[in-house]
Length: 444
Image (cartoon, rainbow, N blue to C red):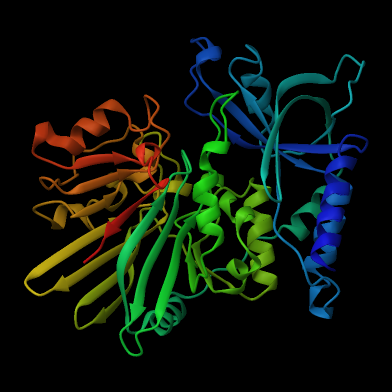
């Protein structure tokens, strides 16, 4: 299939959503909502998976037949429906009752009493990511077991590799690599980070992507075009490896802006904890079919996964505790972290890239072992509210928040903990990276 044929096929599938039966399930439900409060100030209430028979059959045709070279061009896509707090006052409990089940729905208005109307926005993406207002009508009728089994068979979870296998693969790929720069892009409340360096054995360039995310839309009427410069620069990168901290949309959806070579290099990621996310499972299935994905086993205890050493550099990979910490989910807490330590003459530069892993989830493994903070810290979970008691700071070092600069990105008490009354980090927010739409951080 040529690229133009792929684009036409996706366009046809997206268009057919409005005349086909739609299947919906809850992908994200904002668990922080207190129903005693007014929902109109809560931003996102829920994100729903959207599937149709056409989508399922299209994905099945690739995932099960691509070994016969039937489809040469394919890019993962996302299709969801977002419901906001200013749209309803009585939907939260209904959505919560849906649980993990799939229900029949439609984007055409249904007059029958039992079909419930939900106002919000369709979020669809192959390239670019597009939003438009709409209503979805959800029935009380669950999908039959045969259809649900078919969905589960197509979007099956990828089996985790043994730690020793993961360690050998990463060591083989990063042997002789020293990173010198991190480019942290402004894509709002999303993580898109490029680690740049070279192979000291032959002085060739080496590029790693640590997360390929894009703005998680929390509020309606939020504009997207301000991230154009970042995604255009990202589009030029020729990655040698992709490391995913975890599988939330704001850490993976930026992949729709990448060239196909992004999917032709090795990927490493923890298990998908949030198994309800069809977009994440579609991406994982696609990479698995291409034999490019290595899945890492999560564990209730935080652990060091691998360390790669060169004469002047140490690169370490960790996984956080796979358990909820306050309001931070297991998907976030059990994510992957990268630590880089570079020695240059008499100077050591230490950097920590946290993904969404909160301080609590790695306090015994990392934070309690330190007297001061890092020279460069990528702040976890976009600077949201969390327990910062184990955080160590360093005066005039840099802490970067991947956020849109709203009142919660970074959250006030988190920002204050980082700054430590002027004795800690200089806090940078990617939204303020005006000149190039990114921050370039020197790692050595």
